[in-house]
Image 1: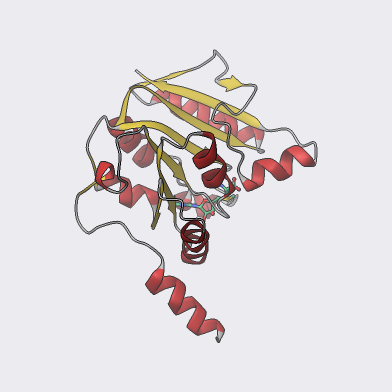
Image 2: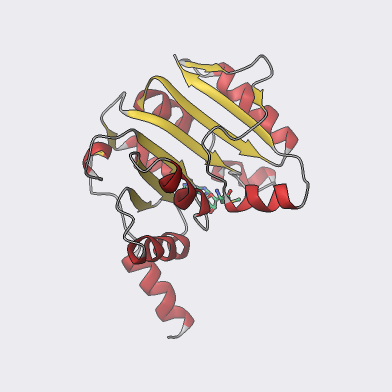
Length: 205
Ligand SMILES: C[S@@+](CC[C@H](N)C(=O)[O-])C[C@H]1O[C@@H](n2cnc3c(N)ncnc32)[C@H](O)[C@@H]1O
């Protein structure tokens, strides 16, 4: 297949969210905890989380069509039915998501790989996303963010302090270990290379 045919395949076949407002709870059968993995990239965190917590219903959101398509293909091959992929910008998808107060856990592993000031608008973690997460998360639900960029970690902790409805797990905001028993591809690489990782946990009030 030519590159342009592949691009069209990814664009047309990557799984999308239903049109309009839709229910996260109806995406996956069952009644287990509802979890979001935002920007899952090559998808290791989805597979590890599905295995660590088979009762959870895990919704992965990824903006890149190729990654969403390929990870979805691997999920289907393994017949992993407790994970559902939605391709698109998480900020737009979550704005249309219902019901409020339904989500138990949210992970953002190594988000926002852009550094230039002019790319600020692309950053997924910001007021728009945090406001929707605060709406969608249950009281007591956990939001976990990790990054290998210290100043980004500081920004994320500061943004969470400013967002009504969240309390950081410690005064600094940082925790030692990933609490979800599911490594992302970037986390696995950083740990193997001995690089520091800043991990932040916040709870929905
Ligand atoms: C640096 S990668 C990290 C991938 C993976 N979470 C990991 O830790 O290995 C950031 C990922 O977030 C995705 N992403 C960035 N902005 C997004 C958005 N607005 N909505 C959904 N995914 C987004 C990117 O396409 C990319 O796959």
